Amino acid sequence: MSIILNNISKHFGNFSALKDINLEIPEGELVALLGPSGCGKTTLLRIIAGLERPDTGQVLLKGEDKTYQDIRERGVGFVFQHYALFRHMSVFENIAFGLRVKPRNKRPSEAEIQKKVHALLELVQLDWLQNRYPDQLSGGQRQRIALARALAVEPEVLLLDEPFGALDASVRKDLRQWLRHLHENLNVTSIFVTHDQEEAMEVASRVVVFNHGVIEQQGSPSEIYDNPANEFVSRFIGDTNIIPLEHHNADWLALSGLSIATNANTANEVHVRPHDLEITKSNNDNAATATLKDWQHLGALIRIELAKKGVNGTPDIIYAEMPNEQFKRLQLGKGDKVELRIRHAHWFDAA
Amino acid sequence: MHSHKMTKIALKDPTWVRYGLIAISLGTIFLFLCLPLLTIFFEAFAKGWGNYFDELTDFNARAAMRLTLVVALISVPLTVVFGIASAWAIARFEFRGKSILITLIDLPFSVSPVTAGLIFVLLFGAHGWFGEWLQAHDVKIIFAVPGIVLATLFITCPFVARELIPLMQEMGNEEEEAALSLGASSWTMFWRVTLPNIKWGLLYGVVLCNARAMGEFGAVSVVSGHIRGVTNTLPLHVENTYNEYNAVGAFAAASLLALLAVVTLVLKTFLEWQQQRDRTAISQP
Image 1 (cartoon, rainbow over the protein chains, first blue to last red):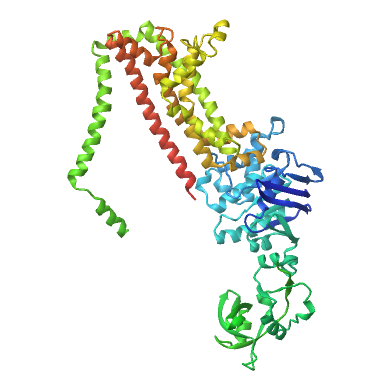
Image 2: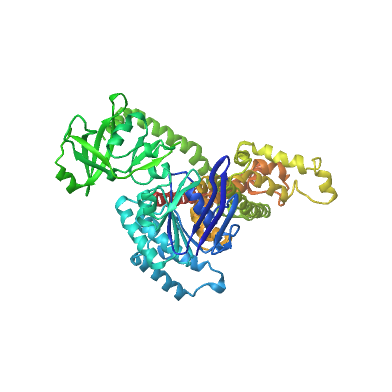
């Protein structure tokens, strides 16, 4: 089911949570609403679900205006951040709830309910937990049961609020992969809210970046990473070195292959991703642009801490990243002078 | 661990202080609680079982029991409805005057019951604001059952609400939203999700409310008029019979109220234990 949002605004008292949001989500996508906390992403999810009403604007599901329709008539499945499993019901009854509360003429028979619930339990690979109660499950198990419960009513849209927010790092990694595969199999239009950019990039087919109640950028993960639309997106997605275009930076940027003159229009900041910064050992110590201070192992990558001359002689720290092997070949030690070359950079006009 | 032990040693009082304090509390409880309770049963059975049962099956005693039950049967359900409605409103919605409502719910606790009774006399009594109108339409409130119910309602209305408000605030409404998102109607949501979650707190409130409804003396005394066999509740019956120097009758009726208190205490403890168990279950990861 496609989702179209037209001019959605929402206020809470004096606080403006969403400002004139326009968004189109094609059928079958797995979309991440990404942003720092308080940016309005959860409010938007709740508006799509019908748990919240927008002050202005329209919610179109499958082309139909459903702005004022009740949540139970929208055909959406909602997975809550803290799962909201019914604590006094067994896992089986939790999943069966949506089937049991259907109007009598649409309610499946007990045998059909049994079959359906077991199919869902198998889908989330937790068939052996059917008689447990929510308080006897781990966080990851609760999350999967909450998902099975939402899927029981065969929603046309699946909405997930911070689905991995309350889980351990290792469980989170597994569940991310699992959710993506599940989406591939079910092909239900799905939207999830997250503040974790890594999670959004890994799981989603499209990412919508929010800040202060407006959409900053939307696109595929690679589009957003490679071409951040503005300074906020560039800062928020991935790591980046932020270098103000001030006089003392001009020289070494020029030496590193960035000519400021060509981009002198309105930009006052340049962002360089750590892996876009190339390092070579300096042949001429006096002309060298930076000193190697330290490095850290990040698994396959090495993060290199570099000091270059800043204002008043205090060193500015910038970071570079490169594969382990490459770093070994450079044979660099602490305190060595290095030359920098910037492969790629983004220019922004920061407010 | 170490510092914990240190404080314990520091806080350890001499033996005579500890046993002194224990003796004072036990002594007080025996003197002011156990002894009077025993006296009630002692006096009630002073002239044998036969007399005891005669007094309890006496016409006026039975009328008083019946009235007490009727009053409780009317006021407890109404208090439950009021309690759930106001707890729901306070825990789930933001509205103007919410803090005033929370304060007002506690009002009956801070007003003397006699004053509460007097309010109704001033409103509905023969010389009260609505007295003439009520007389003209032949409606009796004061010195009749409706007045007793009203006074009891006034006294008992906070009991359920006070239990449920913190409970529902703590619970949040995600489970309810989940039920709605799964297609449940508001009614189904209430019966199958909200009510099972608040049931122990609700029962706790009901038990306390019932004890108070059956045991209330002050407010009911003002509005009842003490018409024997008609507007006497059990506590009023105790007073009446005692004033007539019928000690066995008074203590027999009082023994029923004492039994009610014991049953209430047992139920209250059980419900507290149940709630505690549910709460630890929630807090587990």
